[in-house]
Image 1: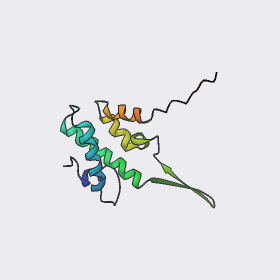
Image 2: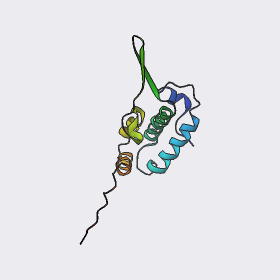
Image 3: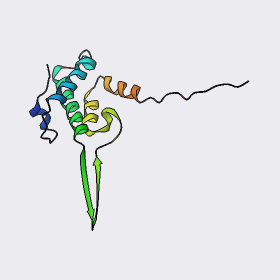
Image 4: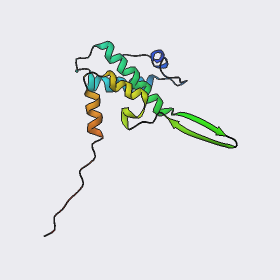
Length: 121
């Protein structure tokens, strides 16, 4: 059962999308990884809300357009890293997790593989 609502998510991100699919995915992640972390239910609901907004932001990237004379440039704003760190909304979810669980998972996912090595005799 989700801890947040479409209306709550739309308080922090402007979208015409039905956010329920994003809420359901965020709820699954929060329940799986944070339900046993000792965080209060209200805290989990807030993390879930920001995580859902993060998923909406990935689906509907924010674009900024700049024009100078006849030239116009459009670029995606808010892309800051990978995973939850790639959007302002995901970064907020990470900061709200005082257990550090999500940050630990993000760090583990971004650990580069060790380079291959071999010895020649």
